[in-house]
Length: 273
Image (cartoon, rainbow, N blue to C red; front, side, top):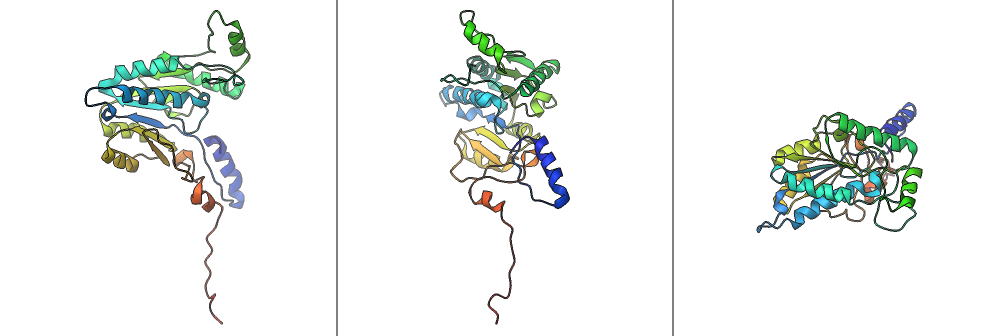
């Protein structure tokens, strides 16, 4: 388990002796929210919750999760509403020490990772994405909380960052950042949303919010990833975990995880004299 770069290096090291390698690597998951989660009476509560959960899942663990849904796709007709909800959720994401109890995110793992995330945030701005929340640098604590500011200054804390109007050619849209950075963009049709989701070298997990069972079955086939999560329902125990493309070539969990460590053997003539 590790980055795609690490997976390539491990594979290269194993190649001379033809060792089998089990790889579970990075991802750039899409999170597609469809307007059929809006009530017939116009109730937006489920749609709002889906957007808020999408922001939370992207920021969770300070974004250092291989299957984080870091590309949020929302219907164009509800674009501004979704963007407002996402902005508020990003701004409400608290940052504090990992030693403190509470519902907040902590620092990223190292100075090297902090600088990497900062580089991506600056690239997003330079390439024309609209910065909606967060941005470069460390978080800024309230004036009446100097202790929190000292915590920020002494660690590798990143501001929860939200980019809008991201195109599929932008670096922040295409590459795994591994930090609390979320990109959101609108789509017009289901086919466009699927195309955007699949337009990535990765293929670990994609997420979909829809109450249409026929659409769920259709998208389960169309989305190019090792895992698809509908409506926030987690995987069953012993379900296979793993991806395709630059996200890996094997599975963890259940019988599939065991099979990676086995080799089929053909035996004949056991019942002969």
